[in-house]
Image (cartoon, rainbow, N blue to C red; front, side):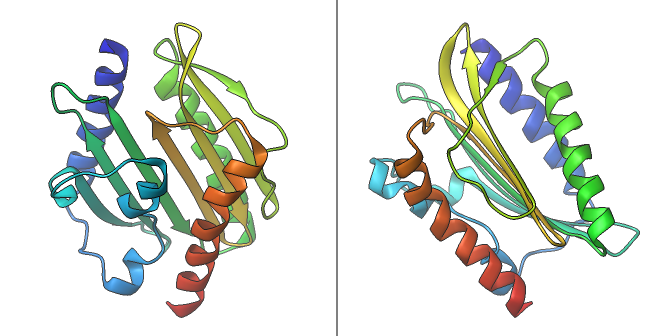
Length: 188
């Protein structure tokens, strides 16, 4: 649990720092991202979820934009639950491929020595590239990361406190999120 708390502190620290200079998200921009309501079918619901969530918009010098949703619940007496959905809209296919690779390297550095990861194959293939990793703490599954790239859209979903190892269950979870992201991207 200490490792997960440290990991969450690192994520929050980065994003609280990154929030300086970020813009508020419009309703259309928020539609790019999942939110805590997607987890209700799995028995994950919270009173006043807005207390634990944060939306960020991070513009870059090249005019690409990253949108993030974070949900972090660390109240005593209840299990840790963390969600991060990040979507970046790149300016070119090459930039998207580079962002996908860069994101992979960054995640490997963030988790090094904290959590082990193990590839999960055949869960759900999407776009030009997609990868899924099971996160392990002391050999016990504790979460997962799903990363994807389609054209100029690059995304990742990190879950701690929930994971899928069954392709049908994961597809049932991920397909509506990806469809919503695609539709929202087209509407921007």
